Amino acid sequence: MENTTVEKIPLCPSARPTVDRSVVFGVVNGTADRPRVVYLKHAQTVTEELVAKVHPVTPAEVLRAASPCETKACQHFDGTNCRLATRVSAQLPAVAEQLPPCAIRRDCRWWQQEGSAVCFRCPQVITDNSNPSTLMKEVSTPAVS
Image (cartoon, rainbow, N blue to C red):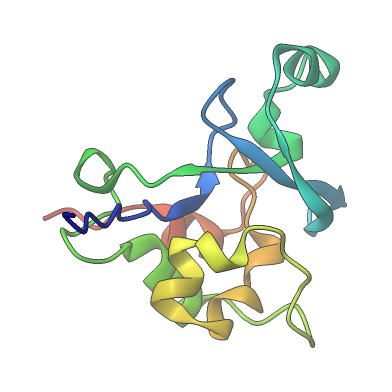
C-alpha cells in the first residue's frame, strides 16, 4: 500500500474574511487608537449571515480571520516565509504579557514561522485598520523588491 502524506496548508492569521474559505478567530475590541483583538475560544466559519451582521463596515475591520496561506499569490510571501510575520515579530512592541488563547495557533503560519514572539504582538494587528499608526503602516507595507 502506498503511503501518501497530505501536507496541510498553514493558515494566514491576517486574511480577509471570505465565505467558505475562512474562519474567524477573534473580534476587534479596544479603541480606534488602540485596537485589540479578543480571541474566540473556538474558531467560527465565516458565513454570509456573519458578514451581513457586521455591515456596513468591512468584516476585516471588526473580525480577525484566517484562511489558507496563499503563498506565492501573496505580496508578503517571499517563497519560503511570510515577511509580514517577520516584520510584526521584529518591529511591533509586545502587547500581551501571556500567550493569547488562540484557536488557530497550531495551524498558524505566523506561529510556525516566528513562534511565541509574534503571538505577543498579534492582538494589535487589524486587517482593515482605518486609523493605523505610522509604525503599523510601515510594518504592514510590503518591501518593494
